[in-house]
Image 1 (cartoon, rainbow, N blue to C red):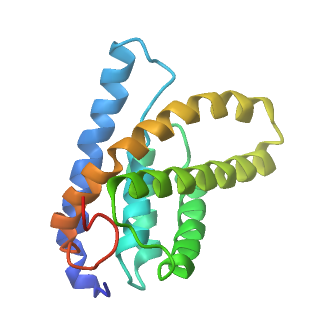
Image 2 (tube, rainbow, N blue to C red; image 1 turned 60 degrees about the vertical axis):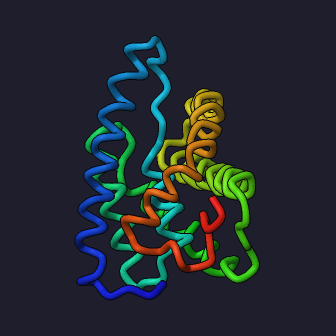
Length: 177
Protein backbone atom coordinates (compact mmCIF):
# COMPACT_ATOMS: atom_id res chain seq x y z
CA UNK A 1 0.00 0.00 0.00
CA UNK A 2 1.51 3.33 -1.06
CA UNK A 3 1.60 5.93 1.65
CA UNK A 4 2.42 9.60 1.93
CA UNK A 5 4.51 10.89 4.80
CA UNK A 6 1.57 12.52 6.60
CA UNK A 7 -0.22 9.14 6.67
CA UNK A 8 2.76 7.51 8.40
CA UNK A 9 3.21 9.74 11.44
CA UNK A 10 0.44 8.44 13.74
CA UNK A 11 0.93 4.72 12.94
CA UNK A 12 4.69 5.14 13.36
CA UNK A 13 4.21 6.81 16.75
CA UNK A 14 1.94 3.97 17.92
CA UNK A 15 4.37 1.36 16.58
CA UNK A 16 7.28 3.02 18.38
CA UNK A 17 5.24 3.09 21.58
CA UNK A 18 4.54 -0.65 21.21
CA UNK A 19 8.23 -1.27 20.44
CA UNK A 20 9.27 0.65 23.54
CA UNK A 21 6.88 -1.32 25.76
CA UNK A 22 7.99 -4.64 24.23
CA UNK A 23 11.67 -3.74 24.60
CA UNK A 24 11.17 -2.80 28.26
CA UNK A 25 9.36 -6.08 28.90
CA UNK A 26 11.98 -8.07 26.99
CA UNK A 27 14.96 -6.46 28.68
CA UNK A 28 13.49 -6.70 32.16
CA UNK A 29 11.38 -9.87 32.29
CA UNK A 30 13.63 -12.35 30.49
CA UNK A 31 16.61 -11.66 32.80
CA UNK A 32 14.26 -11.90 35.79
CA UNK A 33 13.39 -15.45 34.68
CA UNK A 34 17.04 -16.41 34.32
CA UNK A 35 17.53 -15.81 30.59
CA UNK A 36 20.18 -13.10 30.89
CA UNK A 37 21.63 -13.58 27.41
CA UNK A 38 18.33 -13.66 25.53
CA UNK A 39 16.44 -10.61 24.36
CA UNK A 40 13.62 -10.97 21.87
CA UNK A 41 14.33 -8.69 18.86
CA UNK A 42 10.96 -7.09 18.28
CA UNK A 43 12.62 -4.50 16.06
CA UNK A 44 13.25 -7.16 13.41
CA UNK A 45 9.60 -8.15 13.52
CA UNK A 46 8.52 -4.55 12.97
CA UNK A 47 10.99 -3.99 10.13
CA UNK A 48 9.83 -7.18 8.41
CA UNK A 49 6.22 -6.10 8.78
CA UNK A 50 6.99 -2.70 7.27
CA UNK A 51 8.83 -4.36 4.40
CA UNK A 52 5.99 -6.75 3.66
CA UNK A 53 3.14 -4.30 4.00
CA UNK A 54 4.22 -0.79 3.08
CA UNK A 55 5.17 0.58 -0.30
CA UNK A 56 6.47 4.02 0.45
CA UNK A 57 9.56 5.99 -0.51
CA UNK A 58 10.02 6.66 3.21
CA UNK A 59 10.56 3.00 4.12
CA UNK A 60 14.30 3.48 4.70
CA UNK A 61 13.56 6.38 7.06
CA UNK A 62 11.00 4.26 8.93
CA UNK A 63 13.56 1.48 9.32
CA UNK A 64 16.13 3.98 10.58
CA UNK A 65 13.68 5.31 13.17
CA UNK A 66 12.73 1.82 14.38
CA UNK A 67 16.38 0.80 14.64
CA UNK A 68 17.27 4.02 16.44
CA UNK A 69 14.55 3.43 19.04
CA UNK A 70 15.74 -0.17 19.39
CA UNK A 71 19.28 1.04 20.08
CA UNK A 72 18.05 2.72 23.28
CA UNK A 73 17.53 -0.78 24.72
CA UNK A 74 20.41 -2.66 23.13
CA UNK A 75 24.15 -2.51 22.90
CA UNK A 76 23.81 -3.10 19.17
CA UNK A 77 24.32 -0.05 17.06
CA UNK A 78 21.47 1.21 14.95
CA UNK A 79 23.60 1.36 11.82
CA UNK A 80 24.07 -2.38 11.22
CA UNK A 81 20.38 -3.11 11.73
CA UNK A 82 19.39 -0.24 9.47
CA UNK A 83 21.63 -1.47 6.65
CA UNK A 84 20.37 -5.04 7.07
CA UNK A 85 16.74 -3.89 7.28
CA UNK A 86 16.96 -1.80 4.12
CA UNK A 87 18.69 -4.62 2.25
CA UNK A 88 16.05 -7.13 3.36
CA UNK A 89 13.23 -4.76 2.38
CA UNK A 90 14.80 -4.47 -1.08
CA UNK A 91 14.73 -8.26 -1.34
CA UNK A 92 11.12 -8.30 -0.11
CA UNK A 93 10.11 -5.70 -2.70
CA UNK A 94 11.41 -7.98 -5.47
CA UNK A 95 9.68 -11.04 -4.01
CA UNK A 96 6.42 -9.34 -3.01
CA UNK A 97 4.53 -10.51 -6.11
CA UNK A 98 5.83 -14.07 -5.81
CA UNK A 99 5.10 -14.60 -2.11
CA UNK A 100 1.48 -15.17 -1.15
CA UNK A 101 0.74 -15.58 2.53
CA UNK A 102 -2.36 -17.60 3.16
CA UNK A 103 -1.84 -18.99 6.66
CA UNK A 104 -0.10 -18.40 9.95
CA UNK A 105 2.30 -21.27 9.21
CA UNK A 106 3.52 -19.60 6.03
CA UNK A 107 3.88 -16.28 7.85
CA UNK A 108 5.96 -18.01 10.55
CA UNK A 109 8.17 -19.76 7.97
CA UNK A 110 8.78 -16.65 5.87
CA UNK A 111 9.52 -14.58 8.97
CA UNK A 112 12.06 -17.19 10.08
CA UNK A 113 13.76 -17.22 6.67
CA UNK A 114 14.13 -13.45 6.63
CA UNK A 115 15.44 -13.45 10.20
CA UNK A 116 18.17 -15.86 9.12
CA UNK A 117 19.03 -13.51 6.25
CA UNK A 118 19.04 -10.62 8.76
CA UNK A 119 21.40 -12.52 11.07
CA UNK A 120 23.77 -13.38 8.22
CA UNK A 121 23.86 -9.77 7.03
CA UNK A 122 24.43 -8.26 10.46
CA UNK A 123 26.99 -10.93 11.33
CA UNK A 124 28.89 -10.32 8.12
CA UNK A 125 28.88 -6.57 8.67
CA UNK A 126 29.94 -7.01 12.30
CA UNK A 127 32.76 -9.34 11.26
CA UNK A 128 33.97 -6.82 8.69
CA UNK A 129 33.86 -4.11 11.33
CA UNK A 130 35.61 -5.98 14.17
CA UNK A 131 37.40 -8.93 12.55
CA UNK A 132 36.21 -11.03 15.53
CA UNK A 133 34.54 -14.31 14.59
CA UNK A 134 34.16 -15.83 18.09
CA UNK A 135 31.46 -13.35 19.08
CA UNK A 136 29.42 -14.33 16.03
CA UNK A 137 29.50 -18.03 16.91
CA UNK A 138 28.27 -17.24 20.43
CA UNK A 139 25.56 -14.96 19.06
CA UNK A 140 24.37 -17.64 16.63
CA UNK A 141 23.36 -19.94 19.50
CA UNK A 142 21.37 -17.12 21.10
CA UNK A 143 19.86 -16.16 17.76
CA UNK A 144 18.12 -19.49 17.19
CA UNK A 145 15.69 -19.44 20.15
CA UNK A 146 15.14 -15.68 19.79
CA UNK A 147 14.28 -16.00 16.10
CA UNK A 148 11.96 -18.95 16.69
CA UNK A 149 10.12 -16.96 19.38
CA UNK A 150 9.72 -13.97 17.04
CA UNK A 151 8.54 -16.20 14.19
CA UNK A 152 5.90 -17.81 16.38
CA UNK A 153 4.66 -14.39 17.50
CA UNK A 154 4.64 -12.93 13.97
CA UNK A 155 1.03 -13.78 13.00
CA UNK A 156 -0.31 -12.21 16.19
CA UNK A 157 1.76 -9.03 15.92
CA UNK A 158 1.19 -8.70 12.17
CA UNK A 159 -2.56 -8.70 12.78
CA UNK A 160 -2.12 -5.96 15.41
CA UNK A 161 0.07 -3.92 13.05
CA UNK A 162 -2.50 -4.42 10.27
CA UNK A 163 -5.00 -2.53 12.42
CA UNK A 164 -2.51 0.18 13.35
CA UNK A 165 -1.23 0.76 9.81
CA UNK A 166 -4.60 0.12 8.12
CA UNK A 167 -3.22 -2.55 5.80
CA UNK A 168 -5.54 -5.49 6.44
CA UNK A 169 -7.16 -5.32 3.00
CA UNK A 170 -3.90 -5.56 1.05
CA UNK A 171 -4.19 -9.27 0.30
CA UNK A 172 -0.70 -9.83 1.65
CA UNK A 173 0.64 -11.07 4.95
CA UNK A 174 -1.77 -11.85 7.71
CA UNK A 175 -4.93 -11.76 5.63
CA UNK A 176 -6.17 -15.15 6.78
CA UNK A 177 -4.63 -15.05 10.22
